[in-house]
Image (cartoon, rainbow, N blue to C red; front, side, top):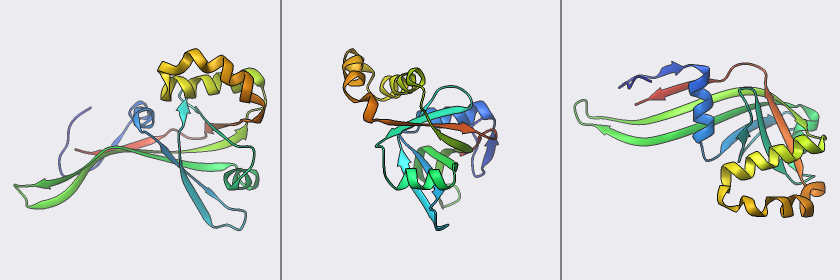
Length: 160
């Protein structure tokens, strides 16, 4: 990737996916049943170039939104740094960002659900994987897993 100054540049799909992978959380935006917007930060994991997963309780506003309209927008920002550019006396911010559009569905298949939860745990708590099987045995049935399938390639931008 080329470093740039004073302008934004679109990046390719692989670069955008890397931004999603490195972001500590991803904001998922959706529509409430009454049409008003609703967005929240989530801990997502990417399974491949088109599939993301997250887990949640079996009830709540996000599930109400997704039942009404399963299309979501994902956005991630990483390496966000305020900068003062001495040569131009300009206040700006350097960043890497990515957005994607996808369709959500509840994961019902037990094998896929465990795979998704394993990916989440490996991403966020890799040193605790010795306890994964015990946690799955205790909580799989009360944990909801949502799969997001991208419906178009993600895009990214950066300013550095």
